[in-house]
Length: 351
Image (cartoon, rainbow, N blue to C red; front, side):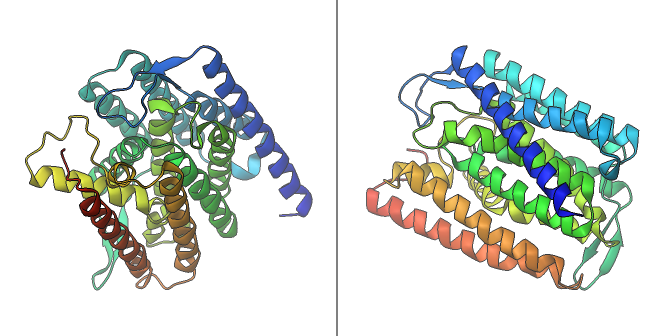
């Protein structure tokens, strides 16, 4: 691609970031207030729903892409279906920000949106597995894709409880995904990731500690869903579909904390759908680590994961899954450090 094209893309992304910022300012002028309670980190009513700016910027970008950019087009039913599903996620999540739906309602909307993406052809049908080689997934591929999209949507949503954390991770992960996709000539994934990054570039200044506004479910569920779908699309980077792991690698710090917390609560008999304040990042803040430091740590993790993803692209298929091991080692180290801070502060999970 010529330099003039890159400059046009950069200028358009900057425009989308400005659109996102305007959307955030609109939500500040007519705020949906997030009231403090025992499970939340803030101690005063704070506006939420700032993710509306991200959604508007992303949808505007996709509309222009659909109308003008033939180089990044995919099959029309898949394009329209996936974007419509993402929009449904955003609308239901915004309604949830206003009315506070039960978890089963949100889960139903997420499953329906995931089913639309799968019906449009975004499904894993094979996967390279160490030792076994390329394994056809058959019907299991549909179940795995559904589990991944719903799981990623919720993981990103669950982790949005500390100023700047999810916003910085998604911004950096989306930028990394855009660069990797460009290197692979996957222009639809490149454009979608770039638009998502632009949306969060416009939002993050309002959310960096101390946050003036939260993204709300409309931002976190939307971002989780879009990145989950792009992970399935990125699987087409190679014939073994092992490139599916790029997005989980980029989001590894969020997925690890969400998975660690879910497993710990399951083992202790906690009700998994009940709201709580015991994620590792939340316990770090309670133990005296500032919100800026926690957000900065997760941003640093994401930069490290982006470097691993760049290495991932150039490895043979059988070695690619091994790139997850350094990311896992770092997260285990982070968990051990947080547990140590908790002990020194006299904190326990569930207090």
